[in-house]
Image (cartoon, rainbow, N blue to C red; front, side):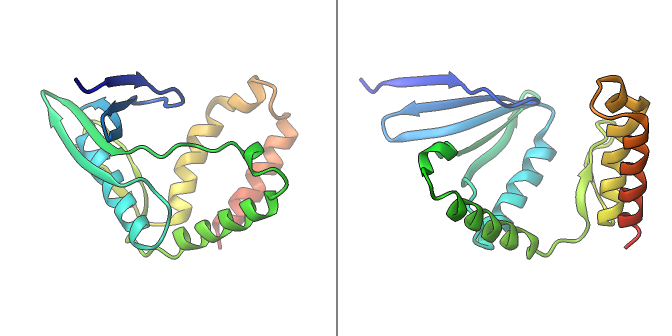
Length: 168
């Protein structure tokens, strides 16, 4: 018979992620309860990125069974930076090229705010709104001070600089 394996992959925070192999089938399957809307938006974003020339895995299926959403995508093996030996400049150049392709993708709105009480996530209307929402979560309760990442003075300086840039 054909060999079959399903190995849990590490690194994800929200989803359960598995690499599933059987014969020539080699895919990554992401699972999460009640996240069909999010997976559909991710599939859409990855398709847009792929059409713009960005290197992203192809998504072959997104669906939901009994409240458990899943996304099936091609497996792309990772590469350690150490494998590039001394061509780190080439890696950074390619990263810059990929970022340029991503930044040239035209969309209506930026990112999304996920509210599980609503049936669909909504796109934020501006870059500053998206960053503002993210900063609100990061800066809430002075968490960066509590964990020793920043002093109060450093945090105040960072907030002032960020707010200034959000007003572009």
